[in-house]
Length: 118
Image (tube, rainbow, N blue to C red; front, side, top):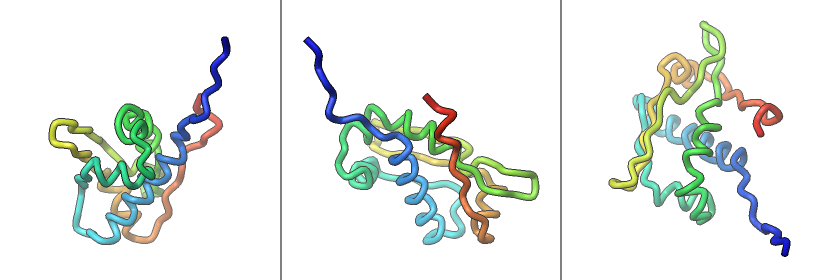
């Protein structure tokens, strides 16, 4: 018997969604050097894809933390650290200060090369 899966999560799409969500957050909160998101908001961001907002979230964030911003020291990761706190239903993201400053000064976010990942 051969079972075909009809739903394959697109981690890169969800990573892109979360990075754009972070980018909007930074625009609205220019003094922030970290962000705390309610996991229910992430669930809504992912169009109520429960697997992506729970089980697959760490894999998605592993891709999202590879997004970089051009700085004076070269390209640096925007996300320096993240923590999924299931007990408090939250996601904590710490930003790299150099990348954050460059982003605020108009530099664009550089996505990771999707062809390198398996």
